Length: 505
Image (cartoon, rainbow, N blue to C red; front, side, top):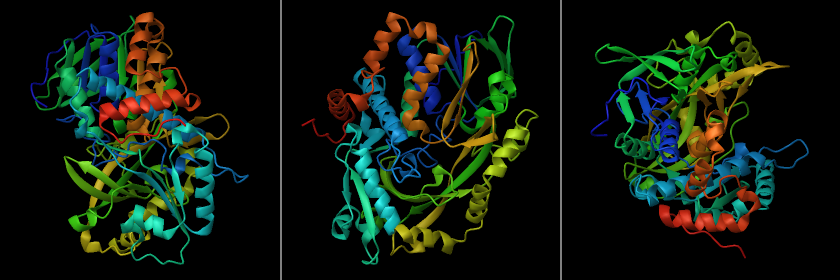
């Protein structure tokens, strides 16, 4: 990013901590809603989107619940729960609308750099899993958001859809898959940097890399004072703002705890790291053109759902398998091994201990993953790619995520696998904690934050009109309005250069 706006405003309206997809989304939204608002952005690294938003770390699928089986659990009565999948699918449609607005209004450059069409598939084997997938398909396709989802347990059909996965597979094995042609691959690193490029050229915005926020304290007048250190020089500054957003990925939890707001007490974090097997053989990479998700192992975190993932990164086609879970006490890939120990406080010790006791299978799973050899990882890969050879793949470290631990009135503490916005009662500060689906639903997450922290402005006619301009479905359930969904999908597909969708019959 060139020509960084390094102008310091010591009394801005807004401070954004962390230069990831969440801060970028909120910053752009606020400048669209109120152009004269002033914003200061601080990032401890020297580039935007270098942690969880980066395509090589975690983000990338364009989560729309088409293929992620952990969003559609099978209930005790044998039926499949679709509520979360529908919510995530609606949220991703909001993201598509917002990105289309930014492109149509020349806020970011053409879409080829960050979003492309690619089929989203679920793949399972074994009689019980095949039965589950069939029920999932039947349940999801009752909702128009999932119209066009195909199901097959015919090996010949599956061989056409995913030859790399079916080549060399035992023909007696029961297998099944679903396929959504309108899935997407999103490079959230590129998208984030595009949005910050726009913000840095916008009056009233200061963007500062290599700056670490060390302290936060609310003043008597309600504003927040933060102390920030320029890492290269050691120079320290104090800045005051009416509102602070902590969007620092795994680094959000320590800053939330430092804020000392009552709403943040009792929160803890459990870091989970990851690794990918990355294909190095171009001939094999060309055999696969889909994002294929399987079922997570019992006791594993949802972020560890195994998938064979085609991505376009920096213009090149890549093929990744994993992620393989791991454990590190760091909260960020570039963080410190003291992150976890230093996050343990008197008010979150019990929730963290209780969550740990109740998640012993997760602990066992992580220990097993950490101890895996290259032959163990190859065995996992061969469940997806039967003819895989280890010499065609290399191990790469993925990103670091922090799963939320929070107080629970009866259980003491629980481990949350989604995302959570924690905000002060007065709306003056908010922090985003958690992991998947994260980046793909950033727009809906930030709309929720606006409701919590900018409620009065949000009710104004000016903001309401602008929000409906940016996100035409704002306030409307697309699951309940199929004609509007088709109209919006057609429009966003055209603007974003994506595969066309079917119309309502």
